[in-house]
Image (cartoon, rainbow, N blue to C red; front, side):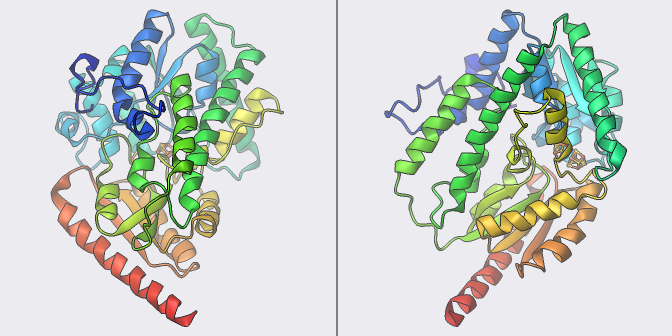
Length: 404
Ligand code: SF4
Ligand code: SF4
C-alpha cells in the first residue's frame, strides 16, 4: 500500500506536527496513509463504519451523513496485479487489476477493515470486477445513468441516491436526517474549496508547487478535520513564499485517467523532463472538486446534481469534459496537453480523438497521448516522447516571444 506497508507501527515517519512554523507544512501529507490508517482505526473503535469507495461518483456526503468514514480503495500498485490476473483477464486496465489484487492479497488494510464497499456502474471492467469482489466482500453498487443529457437521467440518478440513503439507514441502523446531510455537505464543500484554492495557485506565472507536490496534497479519507486545517496552513505558507521561478519549465495540462496513490510515475516523468503540470483535469485533480453541492437546495437533489455533472468518459456524450478542458486552458494557460490513458481503458482511449481534435487543435496546443500501465518498463520511451513534446512547446514559445 505504501512504504510502511500500511502498517503505522512500521512507519519511519512518525506523525509530525505541521503548520506550526517549525517544518514545511507540505510534509504532513507524506504521512497520508499512516494518518488515514490511524483515523480509520480510531473511528472503527468508536463504532463508525468504514465505507470503501472506488470512484468519484460516490456521494461521500451520504456516507458521512450516515456516520460512515469514506475511504478510497483505488489501487495504484503494479505489485498486486499478478495476483489479480489469476482471476481477471490481463487485458484489463491496471487500476482495476491493482484494486482487485489488493483484495486477493489482503494487503490493503482499509479494504480489510471496510464494513461496506460502495461502487457505481461506470466502465464495464469495473462493473464486472465488482461482481467477483461482491462474492467475498459486502458491496452496494449504485446504478449510474450514462446519458447525462437525457431528460429522465437525472430523475433516475436521484432515485438511486434515495435508494442508497435508505440502504445506509437500514444497514447501519441510523437515521440520516436533513441536518446530518447538510452538515456533511458543508464538510465536503469546505474540503473541495480548500483543495481548489491550492489548485488555483497553479494559475500563477510562478506556481508555488510542482504538479506532483499538488497531487500529493490529498487524503484517501474525506472529511478529516485535521486535513482541512492542514490545507489552510499550507495555503497560508505558500502565499508567503517567494516561489522559485519555474519559467523555463513548460506548463502542462494533464488530462485523462486518474493517477491514484502509488501510480504517479507519468507525472514524475513529465516533471523530470522539463514540464510542470499546472493543471490535472482528472479524478485525482480538478474534476471532482470543480463544483460544490448547492447548500440552498434540497440536500439530495443538490448532491445528485453535483455528482451527475462529473465529466467522466463513461458518460455518452461527455460534452462537459470538452467544455471543462476549454475553460481550464483559458485559466491555467498551458503550453501543451498530455492525455494519459491506462492501457485497456476504452472510454478514455476513444475520447482521446476528441481531446486532440476538439481541444488541442482548437487551442493550437501541441498534444501527446500516452497509453501505458503501472509497469515502469516503458518509462524511458515515455520520457523521450515527453522531451520531444517539451522541445515543440519551447520552440512555439520562442516563436510567440519573437512575434510579440
Ligand atoms: S475516471 Fe470515471 S470511473 Fe474513474 S474515478 Fe473518475 S469518475 Fe470514476
Ligand atoms: S481508468 Fe478507465 S478502465 Fe480503468 S477504471 Fe477508470 S474508466 Fe475504468
